[in-house]
View 1 (cartoon, one colour):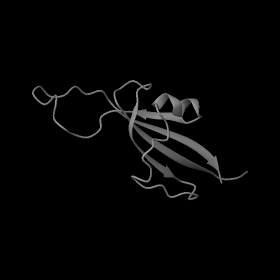
View 2: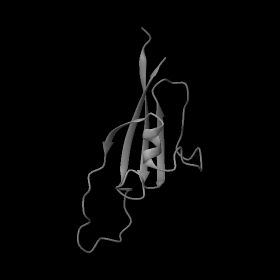
View 3: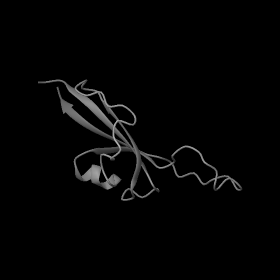
View 4: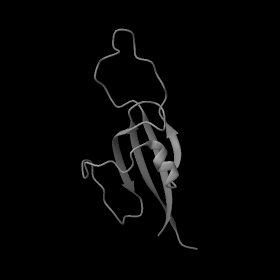
Length: 91
């Protein structure tokens, strides 16, 4: 039986809906076959979060929906709508 390693895909979406547009992303490869880096591509790996599911990635976490504190609705902050996906790969 060959060992299995995890690939992780983090997608930041325009809003909390999984079928909304990807606005940011990060990739991590536990197999060591690739070494993706932040900003290594101007094109997102998927157009929508749902497309990652359709391609076989497993959704393992979605961000909590926390309303902004009154008066801070338009402040710039972290990207709120973060979704973690994983794919298990034989090495």
